[in-house]
Image (cartoon, rainbow, N blue to C red):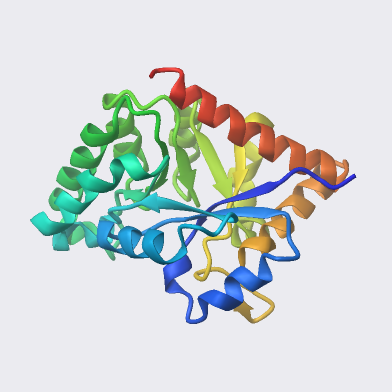
Length: 251
């Protein structure tokens, strides 16, 4: 009997040079992947070209580092596409050195996204680098029941609050390799863990990570918990289904 389907909750399909190679790599894996987008127009293009691929789900995004470039055309596309997907991402805030200059525009954009999707039962995957407390505050204010904090790297204090508020953390192969990532992982209850690849930005074996490489995360937890690969797969899958139910309960 095969292990449950794994869900790669966050990868950038449109950032790969060879999309066909990505989908081909998934033929032998038991993985469904959520393809996030940085702009609404990118989501529309992905859905148009690859929307019939049963292994892929498409998330409507406004990446914080793209917030300053959001035109009214992009916002119109965002509004028009909300009903076409269950998934919203990548969205959030980035107050690191890469994004702090556009902090005000990011907060306005994130608020606009949250106001648009609040109460619609969407699954959000959020970016929070250098802005973990502010990201959590925005999500709380918008009354979003549970979001996925993608590649969380902030303080353990804010992490504790996010978990106590019912949110989830997605873990990628880079996190399980690093001391800081492992310290964060240790703080997250089993019931709040999900997996992601964040491809192609994570690398394994000298190449860009692929959705099937979330098995690296499963194997890490299998060893950590001294249990089978199948058992860990089941935990991640159950958590993902619970996340869906928690958000749709408000409909």
